[in-house]
Image 1 (cartoon, rainbow over the protein chains, first blue to last red):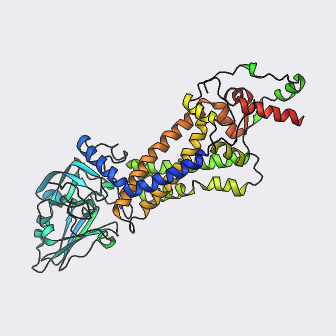
Image 2: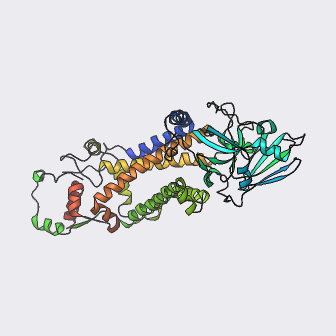
Image 3: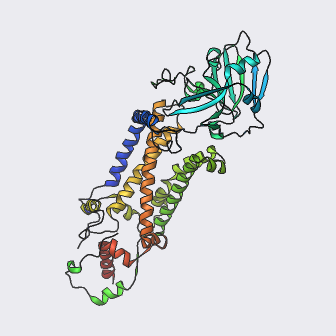
Length: 238
Length: 232
């Protein structure tokens, strides 16, 4: 029996598959965000935060982002500096933070790239209390945050920084903040997209103007209200 | 795989028994050449590194063990970008390769028999069984295309500073979706390799046992034997 390995009736399936999948890849890049956002809405309602949800495409889990690796600082050698236009520059250790009146929140974490983790438990010190400890000078308009990764920065207007749902967090997801989530101490700005919630918080500097942070310099919105900025229409975090 | 030896009554032509004996006596048949072996195992290695580095990123303890996300990310990007290189090298670097180009041509094209193979997933006694079956060809076609998808989406994920945010979200979604499809196909591929140990061994020794080949590539063996017979 003659075996037709390459007769004229054969179909170049591999070539066609490559062409079709290339098109699928391009379409996925162009329009995949629509599917991704929709799935994320479903997942963030259905599934509690679990370790596998960030493996599912569109699953509602944390994606771990960093722009400069994972700087390590233990709770023992952690220091938070509050400087700039303050009456009295202060430095708070990790245990100093724990002694301040805590704020507890259970709120969603919404990333500007579309994923949302529902009902994250947060514990920390209200940023307002820390700023008041140092004493905010009259002319202050902006607050700059720096990470000890040496690269990442973020900023808020003074009015935003004084909100009660902006905290210097030392606990999230019911435990001490892990290194990958920005521990031991990070910021959590509840009403804004995740890039505002700077990880590995090193210093807070008060100034007369708002200095754009890392992502603002790359085109992200300064006033990063969830659902009202960056061309997105996500459900605001209440 | 699970199919039985086809009935012999299809062989109508009388064969020269002594010649048949002489070529049948060899119990192993040349299946691959060293260029193919090189392409296969370097691609497999790169794929392992590519998948391993991204798995390590998902496991905090592993991430710390390998020195953090930044390094693993670079390893992932480099190994992924290099994935097609062994095959390209196979084309330009191994001019003397005996089988590579011919085998890729077989792998790349489906005959009617290959579509039938897919329909029955090999479980049909009347299938024509060439050097590669429809499943192997589908694996080759999908993986080739999937690597292109990963390249496109992976590139966009890197270019977040110049492209709109929604493209990056779409790219992340596409990259994750195809990552899972690729993992599923690779698990299947390795599963079939382990349950067809002779075949796996031939990817190392380049020769396939006649026993295995006569079950799974009957018509290729026949063609091979006929060619050998005419040589003699």
